[in-house]
Length: 559
Image (cartoon, rainbow, N blue to C red):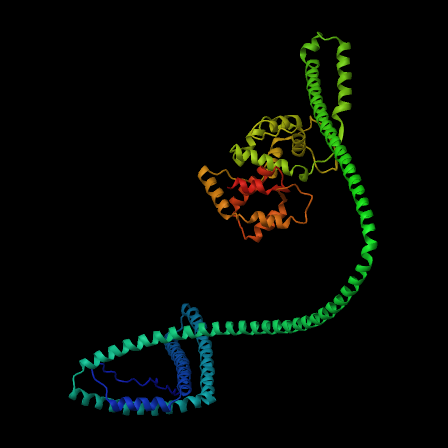
């Protein structure tokens, strides 16, 4: 079988002699070629050229495979000949050599089967090659090869012209200045390419900006149209109102004329009535003043009674605590080992037990409503302020509740009364200690001073209700106070007073927290986290309340 192997096509290479100068005529011809050849034709040629190279590589691979198969067949034929020679040489009447012949015959049969398989593979690959040659692509590639040959001929002709022109230019002038010019031009070309890239990027950015501006313009035009429509509608309404005002003025003028006539006629009759009405008003004012005085006296008396009752309640609670302490001492003396020996008589012991049961039934078992966070909100702020003043770190709050693993309400009361917490109001101490120890899941709780809770739970609840804070140095605190003082506007009082025109139930110089917040927003005063925390503490310190703030004292604090 004869196999046709096509020679590799090479691209036309131009002889680039950098040392030789270029002729003007060659440059003109290259420009003409560029004019008459479109970029699409060049791209198609490049694509076809790449496909041609791929097909040639496939053909070369298949030819190599065929050659390898041929070499394998030749090796197998040689081995067959060698085995046949061995078989012919070993055909002798020998019993020992018959076994060897049988083995060799089996090997020969295996080799023949392999040879048949390889021949079949060769035939299939030959068929594939014939099919490839018959395809349309193959004919197209033949046409392209003809075009490439024509292109090669043209390039050879142009190359000859270039060589001739270069020789002529070399005779006329030297090549060194042209090389310098070429290098200079290459640098200029690179610079221009960079400039083009930058300009393209700027154009893209400008296009994006212009698109955004167009969208904004369209939106603004739409808004302007809406505003114009609204203005037109308002103008119509104003015209209607003006006409209505004219009519009203005419009616008023008519009514005024009529009223003047009526007033002149009624002046004589109304003077007596006015005198009577004035006398009645004076009587009513006197009655109102007397009633107000009586009510104010009643209110004062009620306030004094309330204060007296509060003092009485505090005294009673103190007495209850003292009695509880006495009961504990009695219990300790009763259950001590000395009493067990027999120093205390059994009737006394029974009497103490009866007293203890009666006191517990009267004092200890009080069913009270549960303490909510809203009840202790101001107390927590007071504790936070005292801790901040005493410069107690947030992490060191645990140290003051580490007397034992469990603490009772009575023990917590004693801790809260001492520094750094310093709560002197008995009712506030009671509420806070109940909140720390009692289970707030139920609506009503049996109040018991001996009720205990774990110190870890008490510490966690105490930290949670006090809130996280930070102790600053004196320099940092002064800088925060100075920044707050700079931000506060002196016209803040006027804005707060304007907001309080409709609110008459507040004391002079006070306002609600929401009013202060609105005034700060109106003047666009914004504090940082530390400044806001310090400002809130100062507000509570000055006003002693979270809801109602004495703004006059607050602003005087920062002067």
